[in-house]
Image 1 (cartoon, rainbow, N blue to C red):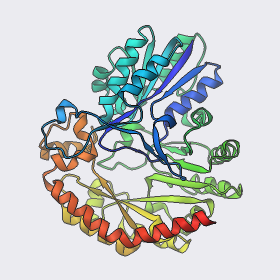
Image 2: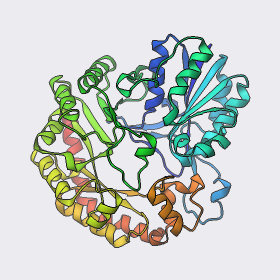
Image 3: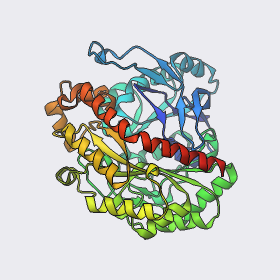
Image 4: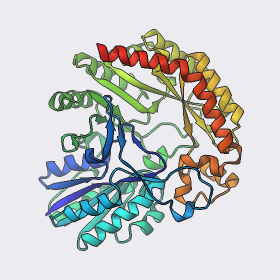
Length: 455
């Protein structure tokens, strides 16, 4: 009997596919193929539930407004709550269409505050396949294992720290040795892109984990130790997959793609460049400016690096220091200088500035926006999401109007509702200030995109 792989819908105030393929599930699919175990995929964020696709691989999901979860009602939240991808009626219809009997049903999870939708989908599947074994993994169950057990009653829960036991479960169910996660990351199968062919980008992960300990980030909880792929083997796989599928967008999933660049990123980019394929590389997770030197900037440009998001977070050196000390102003300034020298325009040099962390002032955010604009970057405002078991999560609890232990309140969209320093009026003023600065840059970006399309 087959395995059923589930990619759940999203319940949120806003959601887009910003190169967010289900990497872990795609690796599982590759491992199942290797071990001759058949599987079906129920992708509730699939092409049937997409309302717009962009040339760079991003997508807008189908959106259906739904009732606000009870916990969030009567809080004067001025946003529509919605289900993205398959809506509740679609989910019912999709589940009823499944005619196979499945020994094992596997579901991925991501954001903690999406559990409202996970629960609905799980209950429908559990009711439909009462004799099946359920296995749930991903970010949500890793960060909030106890909470997830109340959502997925009766399921096997696999936080990242215990992924090897997933292999044991599959082996027991199918009576054969199965290896996927019970080996070093360097030996994991590459993602099964072709089974998820509606996604028009290739997910590539060179390094798993992050060397830094930023106080707002859960990287160390999700992946304790740094592990890496062979950069040449990864690049060759990317090249072969691009040639096989015709896909030319590559999404880099790393938290620290540029760390130890001489050993990893530079060889990877050189091999991509040598292929003579016209690929477009996207790094939406953020790149560390500290590691960008003149050679690396040139390699990025020549290999087709298109989406750049530099992780600055703040221009205030005190905040830089107390939140993780991963970058200094001089390092950011040098990175911009090297990238500009290699040919990047201002519109292409995106920079993340965090907004809403505890003890931060709105003026500090404005100063950081001005700083980035003056240096030559473009600000992307990252509204803070309090992530469980991080130092700033506990600081957030101290100042919050609401109980942040409830995952629904961990949504970055709701930051202005619990953080007294960044209420809705203040946040809107910040966004309007940013919009004013970006008018000229956005026009330049439009001109840039038109020139690329015409080539």
